[in-house]
Length: 142
Image 1 (cartoon, one colour):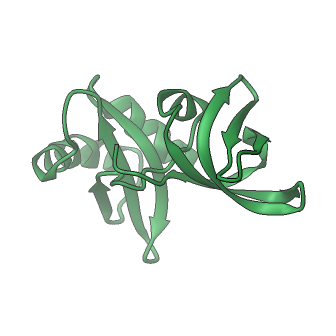
Image 2: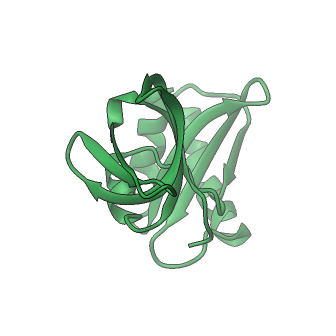
């Protein structure tokens, strides 16, 4: 998967970003792609598919690929995503319990190189290391 994600990232135009790459529905390679200069609409996804598909074939991937917008509940997959969306609400799941919990929903407050802080609805804050996160996504329309 990492190799395919690298192929996709190298192929994308400057205004586009690979948010997440995963296999879904069996062998379908699903690529969530966002853009900096406008909406990741159908036309944009179609253009990205025409750019990325030949590169994936050159890299030896011959299965189906689906290009999609990350949507409203955008996954947070890199530390820079947390920085970009500081002040927004996120839902986060961690592998090992932190303060007895694995699931957190709160506003992204502070971001360091290794962790981020969520302000929880009960006014408490929790610092979570990026290495502990198994899944995180935005909980609002940005």
